[in-house]
Image: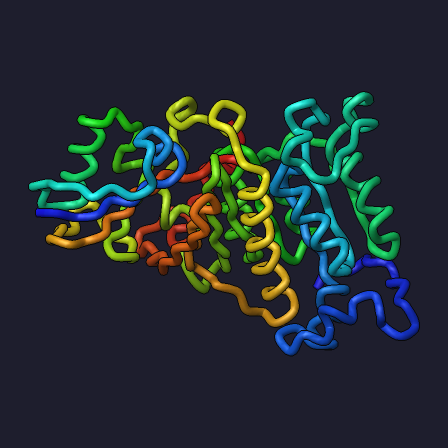
Amino acid sequence: MKIKVKYFALVGERRGVQTDDYETEAATARQLLREIEASKKIPLTTNISKAMVNGRFVEWDEPIRDGDLVTLLSPFSGG
Amino acid sequence: MATGIPPHEKAPDGARYARHARLSLIGRAGQEKIEQSSVLIIGCGSLGCAQAAFLARAGVGRLLLADRDTVQTPNMATQLLYDEQDLRAQAPKAEAAARRLRTINSGIAIEPVVADISAANIEPLIGKADLILDATDNFETRFLINEAAVKAGKPWIYGGVLGTDGMVMAVRPGHGPCLRCLFDLPPPEGRLPPPDVFGVLSTAAAWVAALQTTQALKALACGGADWGRMHTLDIWNGTVTTAEVPRDPACPCCNKREFKFLKPA
């Protein structure tokens, strides 16, 4: 299925983009994070980051459907 | 509201704060509440400098500015209150910021606190304030602020910036989620890069600080803010995403009132 993935800060910079058109078979936000973490070497894990699906914060086992916008966030520490 | 704020030297015609008082969203009554308020800013870096300048010009009655560091060369690009004299003197940021702010508004009380904020000193500081603005540069202190604010029942405004992006969330204990409802624990040290490694755009910090300060002024003037809504800002692309943060019914901080960060090691 085809989804959009939105990144912020560190992840966006490492990816070189803020939003990706992304093709995946991941069924949940957790599976998507693991897939991206492994393939793109990003430093996000479920215990220090959050996911939003279509603008709503979700648990990591939230299903992902074709056409969804998934946002991956790490906390921003700078001040 | 906090006591001990000195009588405010108002222009006879109220001209100084007229632009804010004439806003229907604030009004004269809201402006007077702002002038009777006390705000603690924890951190005098890029966020804290901008917040303090906005609040001093808005006439907040008392500003407490806490920071442990001195002015260094890399600060000059993003920290708006410091000049080259502060840099040459390696002045403590809280004191340099207070000096500059007194030249902006001599009619308010400004108290610098040169200290490392820790479990040992945060609660008395929060006790002096009606509201706390987060301007720290690390997550451990943010979790400490969260616990001390929840314990005291004081509102606080989380803000963080990295690169060209930022996050803002207003926390009102007992009326919505706290920081630990969203992030269970701070990231392990070294897991995510700090701004001095990753970089930060000055305008991103100013945008985050402006939104934090707006939330603070709304809370002080009207009692309202966007409690429990996370605003995620991307200034490079000019976008803001806003999402409701659900309160965690099992939150160890705001539900179970377990204050592990406030307990000294």
